[in-house]
Image (cartoon, rainbow, N blue to C red; front, side, top):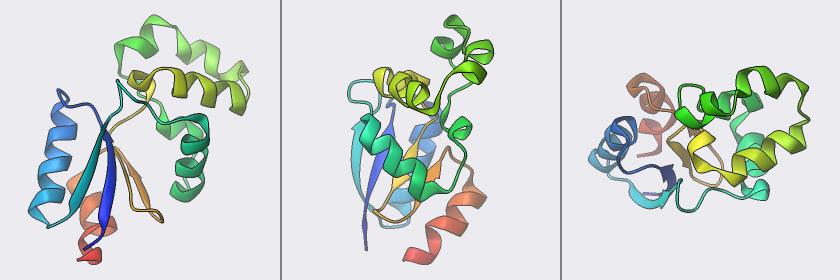
Length: 122
């Protein structure tokens, strides 16, 4: 069974559901508090690259930090590098949980998505 890195925020209900699902499916988890230690720009670049997702999928658009900074209007004018630096500066701006096994990345939690991405790893 592979060990998964899980960037999560412990008080987050979605994160707790994801961690519970992964533990129930026998995964060993390296839990990282995204608020206390957000991924670096380099780590984010690797996660983005391996995920195959657009950068906008990494934003926690429903979070207070996103709304307070008015990022909905600011992001379109920002470069990829500026966006990555902003994400790395505040883990609460990042959609969570992010699960990574060195090859695959999932962002957020939907049971169907986890079934597809992680169930076959057993």
